[in-house]
Image (cartoon, rainbow, N blue to C red; front, side):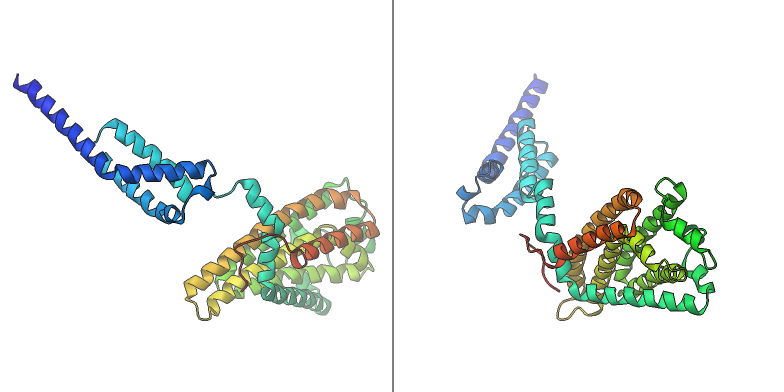
Length: 345
């Protein structure tokens, strides 16, 4: 008779402990549940400022109650209730505030262009460096053609090398819609520029110096190829061939380099802010820009895979390239949409 009596006593004590635990904390649980329920139903206007301010503290209190309930092995009903309430409250406190569509609409509707404008100083510096790199590449190859092989990889160059005839170079940019060789060359250009974009941003944390060198190296190879086609009187045709996707792709490299420089500049010159704070703020702006760079590279890939192959005249290629360049410039520097959270450097 003693065993059943002891077991009944233990159960009674556990029930009493569970009831006492609930009574001591139930008011906070019910208040948090009421707030979460209203927020889930979109009734934010019915919430008082006091409730909104109390929400994080109530969430931590209930989470602590759940931890204690698990450690003390309270009844299953209390555990299940607390687990469900903590999960719902977590999504309200820390979960996403908008859908993917809302984020994309805000991103393309002004967030990206505002982020680019906020780093305009770095965009100008990156642009100047890219122009200088192109000029340097041209001048080096013009002085010594051996520089061409140092700046342009054999896989990308193919038979487009110093000494190539006009017919070979002309055939590289016209009448190649169905030839795989030109597709390989185009894929090589895109792959190279995508890698340069990622690395230009990543190297920004080293005070931006590697980013500058990378921009010079990449555009020097462009200058070398411009010199090559100029030597055979095909400079305008080559620029048109490149413009179809190049105005988008090179613009993406420009922004990636500017994003990297922005981070490096914030670390080197944090101003009155701590270095970590300055780098964190710059990193958030640069991350928005790099998201746009990824989208631009995707657009460039489509232009490279379809538009350039379908249009086989220089004038038509300039129309496409010029349109894309105008579109990007208008969007980044003239478009003012609804955006939030982007601060100027």
